[in-house]
Image (cartoon, rainbow, N blue to C red; front, side):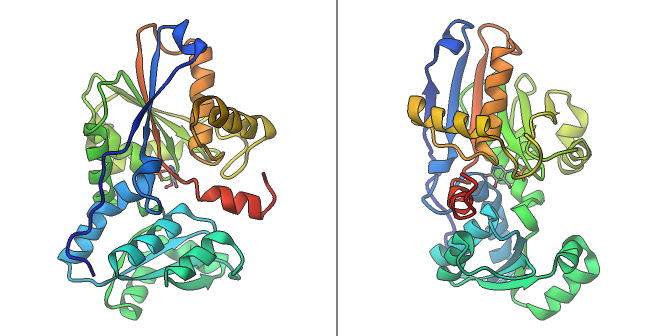
Length: 302
Ligand SMILES: Cc1ncc(COP(=O)(O)O)c(C=O)c1O
């Protein structure tokens, strides 16, 4: 394993020029964390960073984690293992492993050991007894939860917040809540953080975010918007996919419709509905996940 588990974190901040913004006197820039690293991109690196440090500090030499078959997290962990030269294990929500699935194919190429489990077994992934059994089975492994969200993950997202240009609003897509919780930890109280929930019935996430971040518990400078899920996790319609393609053509901003596209689509609707006062400075976080496009093409969903 490499001694220094680090990458260059100075990703681009892209200014978006558009008539919709100009006529409202709104400044919008995108923190292009999708460009952080070709394979360990976006919030995946931010969440992994201090987990990899913890893995080293605890004297562990392997990483074990959990994910769906098209998971960005599995992809990034496999890539990190290959890049920094440590062994990785992925417990995959199965029941079968489709070796032609591009995410699985990539994880295998990175030498991640893959263990498909039934959906019923997968449900136990947060339970202490199940985790204790895995620890026995993989004594050299550092266990990282699905999506990479835990307290160590917040630290990397907090640093991201502190690296951003002065903003009135920071917006990000929200799945498990780790990224927004870390951002809330890192912003000034005068900056408002908005999460766009990418899954249906996500109200419960507000409490999860508060449990992760003491600032989120105390402060009111954040909100989770739960009406922009577009039908549920992984669901999107032709209009959303068209929006992603238009953003690519007009602004050279690559998006996928599961996370970054859903966030930008929601943001655009909020801007057009005059949600933001004139003069607002908005920074949207591109959290990566573009590898997911290959999986959507593979399933002929785009
Ligand atoms: C590309 C991408 N963006 C955003 C998120 C959501 O982040 P979080 O789970 O920390 O809310 C994920 C999932 O972790 C993701 O893969």
